[in-house]
Image 1 (cartoon, one colour):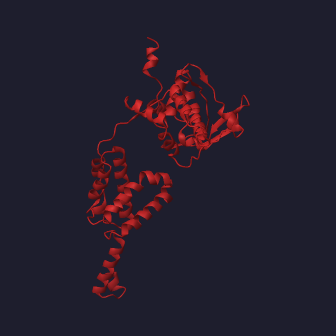
Image 2 (tube, one colour):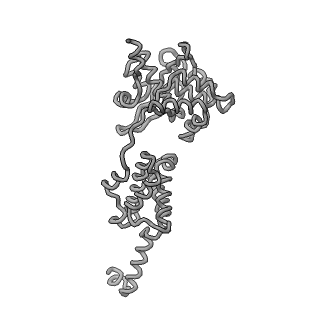
Image 3 (cartoon, one colour):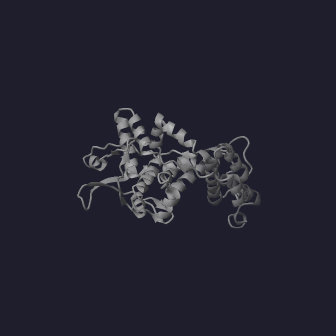
Length: 328
């Protein structure tokens, strides 16, 4: 109406112009979807400040599959049909299927809001999303591997400069119970009381309540299979630049290295029979169990590990059946 009354178009030309604009703005044209995907990624990186690793893991595979379907010969007719087909790709992986539903739904919401995709067809309802996610996978118990198993893994690594760097990284994880991501945030400071080198972690883990505080780290020596304490002066070595670490810019570098080690594969198989999951965080769970066994106060353990009491009690191993058997 505005084109006819205010800009002088005749009715036929006005209809043609509006129709052409609708075609350009609507992703019913398959070639529009890749562009929308690019803009969605840029939007996430700008507003949500997600990292490239998060994009590659939580979005990229699912959205690439979506665009593949949307630009194919048999285009899904609506949001439910699209998300259903994408989720089917990960039908045997509950966690990935749930991530796929959430990623595609967020992508479509962006398309509706920013690119004026018809909301009636391309909005996925809460009920449909829940249905397509399927049954929530049971939470797996992270295995707290034993000190002897950690030492066996370390001793099994080949003698090379590269493996020596990974050996140092694993020792830090085991001795201090840190998160793998915290390997990039370690500094050496003078202990306020003893004056000796001590490790300090500057990492701030973001959570629903804000972020954790930087903290001093507490070393807990491992015990070998003969009951002897294994002492590593890692803080002292780092203080004189004698503790080289491997490249850690890739979030999954440690996991990739461990997956290539025969002893790690054996441990995974052993604990899988107990319905437990061996992963890089297993060093942290082992630290938690070790700290409780030497009777450190709970508040000290939580502070050293950089989390609260509720998280510690719900997420980390702090007792085992064999501890009971020792008192029977």
